[in-house]
Amino acid sequence: MTPIPRRRRRPLDPPAAALAAAASGGLSRRALLGTGVAAGAGLALTGCAPPEPPAAGGVAALDLPTDVSDEEKTLQWANWTAYLDMNGKETQSPTLEAFMEKTGIEVGYYEEVDDNDSYYAKVGPQLRAGQSIDRDIITLTDWMAARLIRDQVVQPLELIQMPNVVGNLLQPLKDASFDPGRMHSITWQSGFAGIGYNKEKVGRELKSLDDLWTDDLKGRVVVLSEFRDTAGLVMQSQGVDIESDWGQAEFEKALDFIEQKIDEGYIRKVKGNSYMEDLTSGNAVAGITWSGDIFVLAYDTEDPNWTFTLPESGGTLWSDNLMVPITSTHRRNAQRLMDYYYDPAVAAQVAAWVNYVCPVEGAQAEMEKIDPDLAESPWIFPTVDFIADNNVQQFRVLDADEDILYADLWSTKVMGN
Image (cartoon, rainbow, N blue to C red; front, side, top):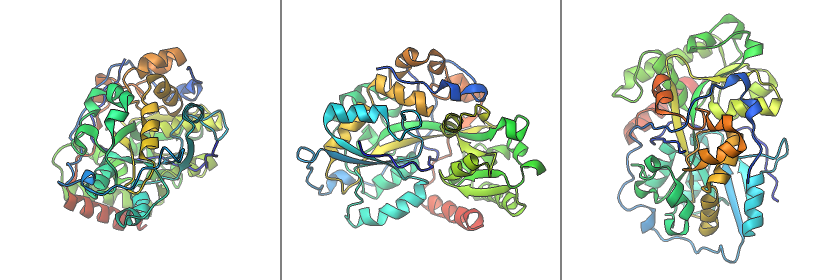
């Protein structure tokens, strides 16, 4: 099998999907939940308007490269870190190995997406020029998926070739407004942004964002470079409903606050998925993080003190998507892999390791066979009440002009520090 480079990753930003949890065994990472995870019940639903639809025309109208999947049994997949089941501490994935044995397709798996913007800044110019990026699947968040679809740099999917996806994609996710009919993207996982910390090293529970700005944590806090998560959480703490009609004034107020905390030395780094390096090394002990990353960290370090919680003022929710770049010549191989991961038993095995929200109908029932407690976890199968009680929101959809303006402000005020 192709080795999996171990880098520090993971997503994200808020999107648009309503999430409903449905009702081969694998190994469970239940131990990594420890004191850091509350348990909650199955059946969930949450919703919000997704990014606006792409302009007319779309990728389907473009000339596509000749697909050579029948002749070349190979596939290259770009993903975030800690986003697939791993065989213990080894750099191998049991589900990916099983796929290769079943299909004969050799998969190169690369944990190289650190941040949506930085990744697309790297591959976007090549894709727009029709040049190969040597990847057949890329995994990006809803709002960025909307941009790639609008830019016509991803291929349409042949859903008729993907029966598991058609049958098992949770109903609320089947018709995203940024991708009507799911013709260009398939949900991989969803998750939350909130507070991640080491309870033993911090010495207390952290319940609000204000709990991060204390003298004993000064210089030991990391925050995400995805502004929809970091600025979104700060805006919530400032009383803003981030799903409603807020504007530049509210956004800049949050950025001013973050900039102040950087200048005062409270925030050590603003990073993409590589923020995990600071937590792993001990240079940071707390921060604004993604949910599943902290559970993986607890497992990787064998330290159950790593804890994830949603701030009292609320948390954010996002979804990531699998897409085929416009230059890929292995679309059908890519579709076979996507469809394979929509087998409920396979999806449950992945969810038991990554601990992100699973988009596959029937995976919760399969999780019962792996670990009944994980089948009740709100981090994997959130309920309507869990979403509402914790004020979990999705950052409202930005139009094209706002997207440019706010990304500019974030880059200047925060990332420039």
